[in-house]
Image 1 (cartoon, rainbow, N blue to C red):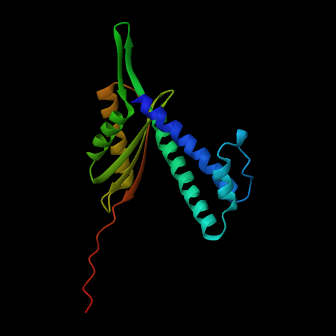
Image 2 (tube, rainbow, N blue to C red; image 1 turned 30 degrees about the vertical axis):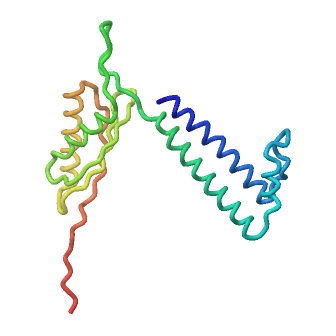
Image 3 (tube, rainbow, N blue to C red; image 1 turned 90 degrees about the vertical axis):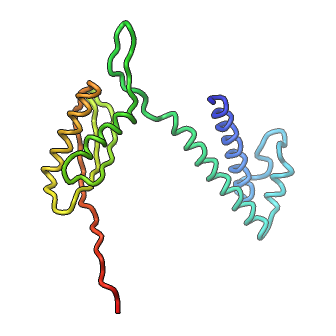
Length: 188
């Protein structure tokens, strides 16, 4: 699995470099002799000599390749920056850990039990003094926002601390009212 990902990343970098060089040559920003030892000189010379619709085609294809490879690299490398595991307990006998995604799901389930909450999405990050949980909730129209937010904060903190055993330093809640479906009278 790791070998395949490395292979994809290397191939994407090679295609990205080729597309960038071709784009620079076709746009006239550099000459076809940009690579050492005349590597790909004939292909680059054809790109440099292209005119009109051919030049536009070369520029379009290389631009699409360039953006595609940047996107591919972003998604491949973004996986490596995902938060890891939270250490719950570490002793001589072993380590107990939980991933951030599980804590996020727990926080969302706990927050969703608060009265008048229609939907909630949470994010979890670590801080020096405990976990920081950020929630975005949608509540029923007319709900008392300060009361609902306090309830969400309390339920989320209690659920995470009680279930996982890690301290929660802060629960940030941003709330909006649900959009009511207003039925319009039929046009006659």
